[in-house]
Amino acid sequence: MKVTVVGAGGNVGSTVSMAVAQRDFAKEVVMVDIVQEKNGDKIYPSKGRALDQWESSPIHQFDTKLTGTVDYEDTAGSDVCVITAGVPRKPGMSRDDLLEINANIVQDVTEKLVKHSPNTIIIVVSNPLDVMAQVALETSGFDSSRVMGMAGILDTARYRSFLAEEIGVSPKDIQALLLGGHGDTMVPLPRFTTVCGMPITQFVDEDKLEEIVERTKGGGGELVNLMGTSAWYAPGAAAAQMVEAIMLDQNRVFPCAAHLNGEYGQEDLFLGVPVKLGKGGIKEIIEVDLNDEEQQLLDESADHVHSVLKEFRQLMDK
Image (cartoon, rainbow, N blue to C red; front, side, top):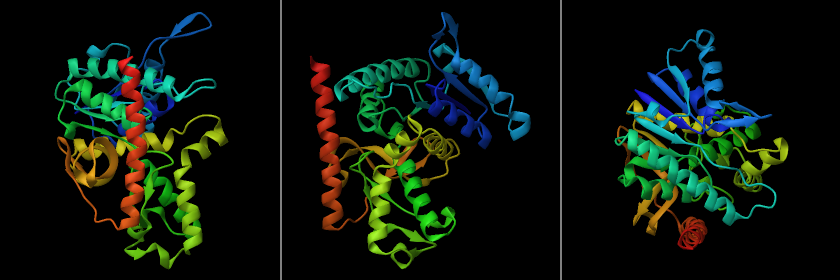
């Protein structure tokens, strides 16, 4: 079993690679990135990080081989490909700039991956995630079951970790569900949040729960303010969990960015919803019965994703 991670010279990509290797279910993880320059010299971040991680294998006790490369031929025959490549938004850069740059990167990467691994499954982590997943789907020509975005697992993990800290229980015992786009318009669902099957409202009052929900929505921004850059440990672990579920055919139920065609009243749109992940990718999109308030929030989140997607298409038509 072979996994490719593109953008693995960066923090998120290298964390995905390490998390997959430590789980020890894959034969090989191929870490891809571009050649860079530093002080006039060429450097190879993916090769360096792959070597560093492989040297930890005797300590962490895994056999998964890590290979760093700049050549997509080395990715041939990959079962799953994770795309983390792209640029973060920088001072003076508009959202249009970010959309156009990252769309071109994701399109180029997808074409190269599909050329060498026509039967692969693609997990997109690059931002803006919902639109970048759309780019990967349209570029690959794959069935929508084989292209998805990582967001819901990360957002749910943040939500669960905040709740665990607040009520003093293990995060393992908290189950939760979030829907919608990745970002401020995500839709946490307290009604589906439990502690060992008990309603979360038995442990947290309404005001505190709402406070935690709002913190979850801004979870990425909180980390940027603290570190001066985007998160990587939790996003990387979340993507690795998706890879594991697919490659081991675990039939795990996770919130992921899936391509909707009628589900939840949405058409031709990637949106965070619960899915069953296993062999072949998304085996099923699970439709939850939402009340009127929850459906309205989800519709508002979808409207936001639609607006960004429209903006993207206008840019590409220029």
